[in-house]
Image (cartoon, rainbow, N blue to C red):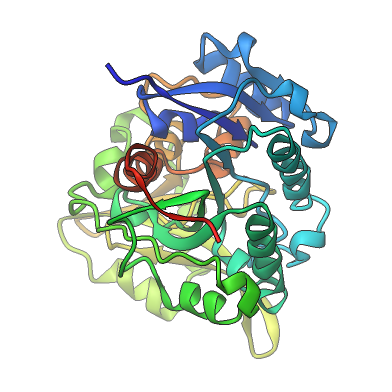
Length: 373
């Protein structure tokens, strides 16, 4: 029987990358700074006491990391890369945590213990932050330590009823035969980011091959709680939500017949030069991208149109967890804010499993064809 692959999980949150990697992987080390996420991780993994470290990544040293891992996974804070954030890039206070992680990778390399693979997961803004300079800096850091790297832009909607595009930068010391080539996940943004790399960094680029997963066969409605088990908005609250909709979105409610379930997200739009809060509804079987709750405005709502009647309510924490691919046995924080924070800041579990099965595990199993440049 083959030994399990080993991994470190940085910025682990509630351990969603660990769940996605699955039973064929053993976690040697995990960390997160956030106390709610740390408590959630410990509540869900019985062995957490032996490998989970709560605290700032800058306070860790290579001595805290046992052995040599096959993989280091880093879902570093995304606020400074997000289109919704300040776009401070790698110089931002939170995303600079990446350099705390990279300091550890460099120390492991100096000690002859560099992970064979590194995966860095983040929002798509990573590709364009500071005109591509931040992505180039990331690539240069990987290249300087002997890694070849490439990026894949994957939307969780391929596997889950949630629109959640993310970038996965996969770096390897050695590139196995048969795992490079064309992929639908080499999006226009990925190709533009590659084209903007300095020549010396681009020389380390790899076009990872990744085929589409089987077609998703589950829609948003299938993941929702029964109507009788949830708290619905009052008619006045639903009317207010409708008032926030522009004509196009309001019309979507009017033309429904039978029962239709949609997701509603509140966002700020600029109209006639002024910021205006709008509610936007979609009936394509997908939720919008989950976010962490900030003042309630980013918490999604569910709208049900049935026989001409419109009802609305907030998305529940358990429903948010399901939209991330978490099983109902997963223990969420008791407060809605805490649970939505853990879910909204996580990585979609089925995406990690698919990436591991179709790329990471084959990379680790296959004989090397090309050494890193």
